[in-house]
Length: 325
Image 1 (cartoon, helix red, strand yellow):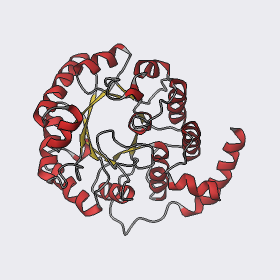
Image 2: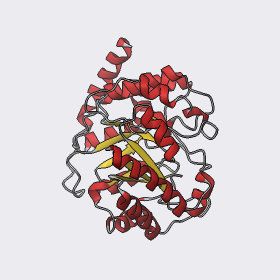
Image 3: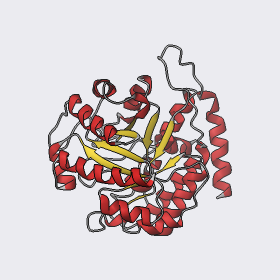
């Protein structure tokens, strides 16, 4: 590992002159961006082969060592539906809890919330969608019914002093309904925010969105939810994730979800490829002079570790490039 670390250090030093480009003509960007690393959960949930628990724990620890402020650790969903997450309690109890880093877990319903709290969760996430058909396929209920489940979790979490983050899926398109009206996204986001979600992550679940569509959607949501409480979660199916994220940053969004090595997909969204690679996001933000607190070298090591464990190539363009230099 020491040899890999030194090799990466030399390569990244060589890339340093490419960074910190003037952004005076590109609009206003936030000075700091909070990256929510979703690789251990959203990135791994779709893997067909079960990833050993110690590998998941080591990955999360490496991501923590890289300085990511939020690492979504696992999901307390029924193992019947997502077998990959059946070791959720072991993972949450086995990871090192770094000071100043949050380790939220996904809880689809009250039963999942109870299991998460019993395992020591200090923050949870709930999810809805802007598509009726996707909601039916994903949770076997309507949008309104899914929000009622969220509310049950939110009420319990509020009483326990546990923060809750909200996800809205299919904000730029649905595998079953096609285009989704921005007003519908805004409606669902408003309801989740009003219920008590401190942050709303807007997900392009199948990665079909383009910058123009992203702008229209965010404009609609901003009328209902403060931009300070908004995050974006872009999949890269059509290679638009970085471009869409850049638009969000220009519009004032300062929280971005991403996945190490671009891992991910969605069990209920056929054709959805991986998330925006965290390595690529950090490289872009660094070039814009935006602070993240993330050590790119250590992040690349984490990506290399999980790709070796999964026996697959990284989807991160930055990782691919540094391997060739």
